[in-house]
Image (cartoon, rainbow, N blue to C red; front, side, top):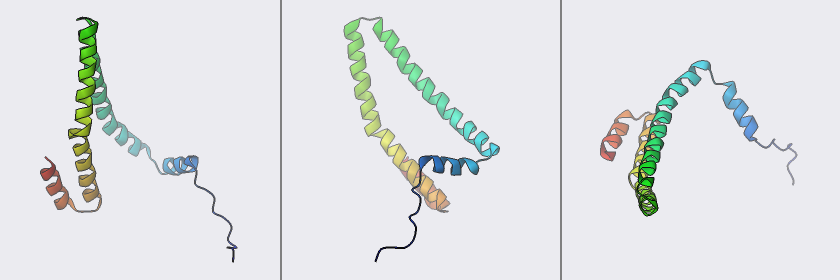
Length: 114
């Protein structure tokens, strides 16, 4: 027989956002901005340094600039498939162990990932 219970309302993205913001305090936002600003500065500096190498390579001519762009793509792909992927996996593993209340295991995992 069909259920006589009324259907549950479908969760919406707006509802999830409202729920998250309703429990957020100014102190939490300040802490997140403090943590996030350092990462944003690092990413901005890295992007700017790559832009500078492109500007310098463009002074050498079109062929040199094309070769430079090809090598940037190859090195970027190599980095993303190797060290970056490994670092993300190690970060998730250590974070899960810390969140699960296992600081010793997290320390071992962190040391082994290095």
